View 1: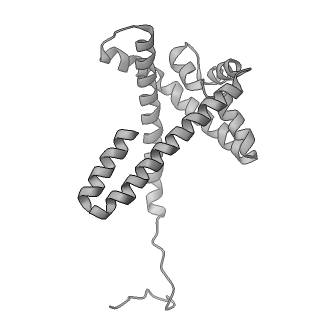
View 2 (view 1 turned 90 degrees about the vertical axis):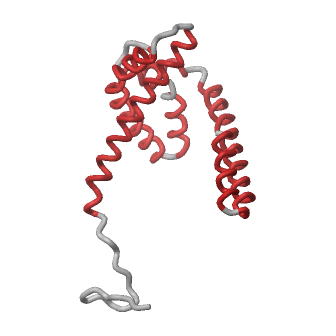
View 3 (view 1 turned 120 degrees about the horizontal axis):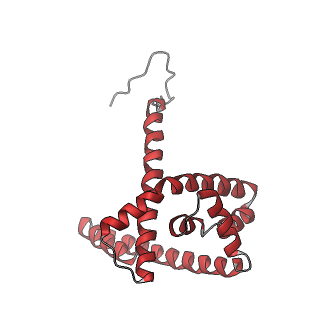
Length: 178
């Protein structure tokens, strides 16, 4: 086993690779992720709303309706990211309060003819007087998701001893639970 030292490198020290050339790719992947998330949110929100209203539209119409809201959702996602980050930087409680008050901003943009910033106000108004109920629903949903994740993790720990077949079975079980 031989270790090559770089020029001027002190033995026993590590050379960190230069990740700076990957920063543009990171920026592109963040933008693509934000756009993709906005489009998927819009399409599924429209699809669920149509189902609740009893409307049956071709999937192409649902996708077009969802895509029409994607730019507003992209702006809204950025506004939510900044406001919630600021709230959580203040302390945990303001961040939680903001996330509860603004939880309906995304549906407001897709389901009502409104812009991203007025959707924040709509969500704020609609949760007024109901924030404790919204918090409790979020708490229960989080506990259920945590429990499902723990069941899947325990399944993976137990079935991992069987090797690759055990990991495949545990992954299928975990995906089925979630």
